[in-house]
Length: 389
Image (cartoon, rainbow, N blue to C red; front, side, top):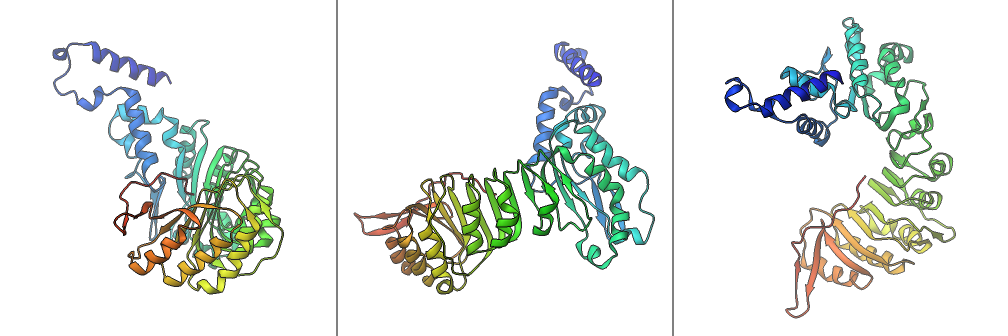
């Protein structure tokens, strides 16, 4: 903090000095306010799709990643190094790539590697941590658990010492035999087998690979504050059970496959569910009855939009019309996320959809029917932003 105050004073002195009094070689970048530099660094670290990676793993080499932000920022000049070190948010988002088979070929645990990780986390102060853990899954499966645990242990000990600051965590299947005390955790993405290892009473967003009705009753239902559920695969009964078990659920999304199964039960009322994203089934007639039963049993007064992802086919539109016509609640909007060209045969059936839904969009573009010209067109208006997991 003392160094940061000195930097502020130095920059202020330079700003009030006459231009001629400054050294002719003074870089213009050094005249930027410290607050602006901090915002630049935070934007660089947080705006990219990838997490800032502390280590670089290439073939049989494991080293510190000094060529990417934020470590590359501290190599520019002394001023940037001071500002970056003093900005906790720059160091609160991190990807840790754990070593794999590289340790079999050369000594891995040089003291500076765990030390770098410890210093990185220390720079983040008390800020909540966003963490992504990457490990060599195939190596873990081939190698004895004791060997894997021994090689990862120095890094895991450091990460676990900060687990109470974890706010967002993305991690693979956990084979380490550890439990995680994470009272501040809000977002969790993990393998379903890892889910039971977390103590996370305040979690609001959960991303897992596969969900069935048994997992809903055993694990998912304990997260009463869960608002956003993202799944790779799920059965129809699991979707139904999740909506029934999570009283504050606002969005539910399935990424790849919805397994067909028929469901029988009582009507479910959810006052909070607003958005549902489902893949278009490859065999629509096989799953039509299951979806029809689910939409008949669900009562969703706050529902706003159904998003369907995948290649659009004629039979899918016929089944969708039947499912939505049988729904016990009104669907205000249906959005098709598809690369399939919009054809006239689809338009005829989409026009029928408008009898049971309020609006039909394609990739967020509103489909409009001009009654006066008896023609159909897609609006070029930009879609409204909505939450995505």
